[in-house]
Image 1 (cartoon, rainbow, N blue to C red):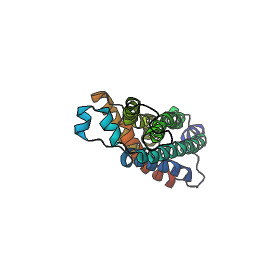
Image 2 (tube, rainbow, N blue to C red; image 1 turned 60 degrees about the horizontal axis):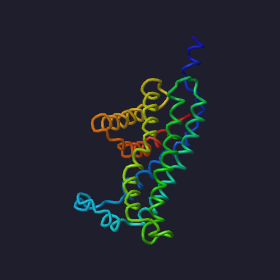
Image 3 (cartoon, rainbow, N blue to C red; image 1 turned 90 degrees about the vertical axis):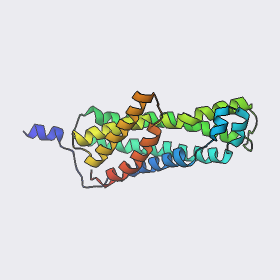
Image 4 (tube, one colour; image 1 turned 90 degrees about the horizontal axis):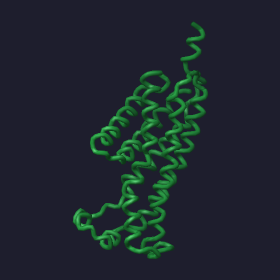
Length: 223
């Protein structure tokens, strides 16, 4: 009986998980980047497909700010991954979900360096940038198309982490249940959009919001 309890019960020290607030910070930066610092282009221009007109509508400053908040999200994800990994090692559980959770964050951090790096390219290459108009309009338009979705599907690794936290909450009772329920909803939404529409970017909608809220919940849980 003693051995069974030792293998399943989490180790508690009475300390709050303040490291989890790095997750909230990453989520906030993701929300700012993917919801606020976006580049809406008129539907008429999009349907017309005029690359020159579309590029002329783009704001270099918005891409500049988006690159800053996007890379800040990456830094916060790395610190959150480190904290989650350290917390996981302190738990008396050999769960694979516990091991995969920080790996999902690292996967997204790597993907988002590339994704949000495109914002930096546009900040540099659009008119007014320090390398403004070095590239052709067609090249700038290609960067615009890549940026349009890359910063969204790059959050898929965080969706995997949300699924792991859902398992750890609802199955193993290592995480507060409402965080697990929120993670399950995030995974369900992203999965449905992928299976029904083949749309890979919905993680960039739900994952930052999940992290913003879940980080607060995890920080209030005693380790």
